[in-house]
Length: 218
Ligand code: G3P
Image (cartoon, rainbow, N blue to C red; front, side):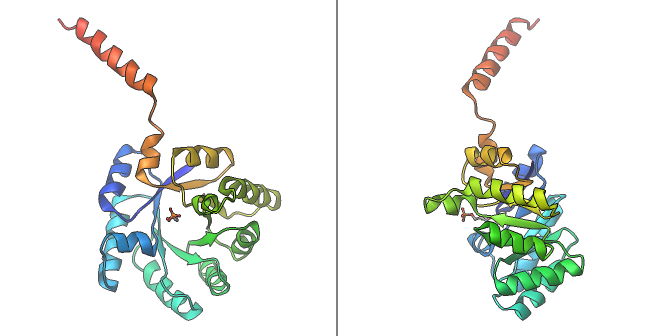
């Protein structure tokens, strides 16, 4: 399973990249706004900075809700850098825009997916990635990981090439559960990725080895 980091924070992206396990980045308007970025020029510049840090795909979301705006913004974002993937909402206009960009060979990430039916439409439109929101489903007492499994099974059965990108990951256990459910990618906060390292026996073991290594100092 590949790891994307779900943030627009350059320091966190650098930290994940330095760990050597990062395969890409996803952003959304909320994450970009959190970084205090204002205006088209600053937004575009920020995406370019992210692309300079990582090697993989960088999802940049369109802000418009109408088809024509999505196409205009998507074309502008795609022209910024070859690593840019156009992120589009799973709405009627969004699906039309996914189809438009996929026919042009531009990578797309169909976002805000909450049902297997939405995932099916995104795959049929040729999306590179489909982003089911695990945490937001759990928030309303639904089962986000079960949806990941359902979509993975349907895509495998019919041979869709669209990759299942588990999004709205909130913690380490979500990552593990999405991996077991067969997600192609999980986009995660840095804290959840680092959480995978946590084990008291690892910490204790390092402590013992360091102490014993000292005994061998000449
Ligand atoms: O990738 C989508 C993600 O950013 C949404 O996460 O925590 O706002 O539901 P969250």
